[in-house]
Image (cartoon, rainbow, N blue to C red; front, side):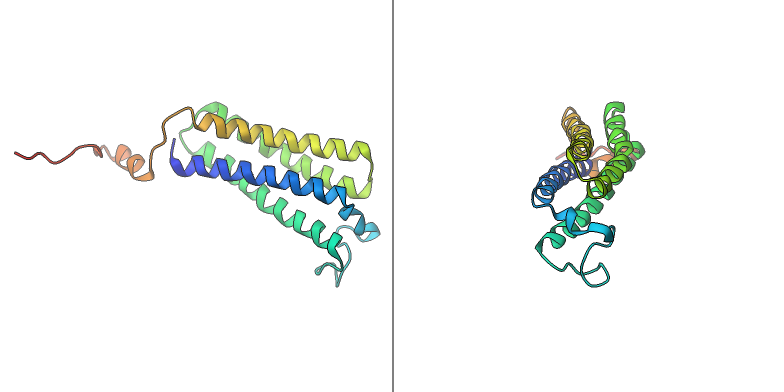
Length: 166
């Protein structure tokens, strides 16, 4: 397990958790409702610049969601390209498969605002978070290696050898 991959999983999990907290705040202040009939553009000049605090929070939530989504996809690609355990690969794959469902449910919370839409959106978010927490926790099962040690191991070089004093 490389240290960089472990850091990627940890950062992605932290981003996911932060996004959920931001999403709770976004929903609590009704920020998505500022979009009204103009969704997905919302209010403001051409939908690009928020007109008030609530629309800023909605747009910021979308930005963090996009960054988090790319981090989840990147974690999954890294897991499947690397020589990592199958449970890490499948946990990240679950997060990636649920991601488009989560995006659709997020849009649904604005268009069809209600308790059911909120519950479904947060359930999908928790499924993604659970998968990422599991992948991150499992990455700590094996000792970490540095990229230098991985490269040396692939080339057959012994990185622990010390020069002899003969």
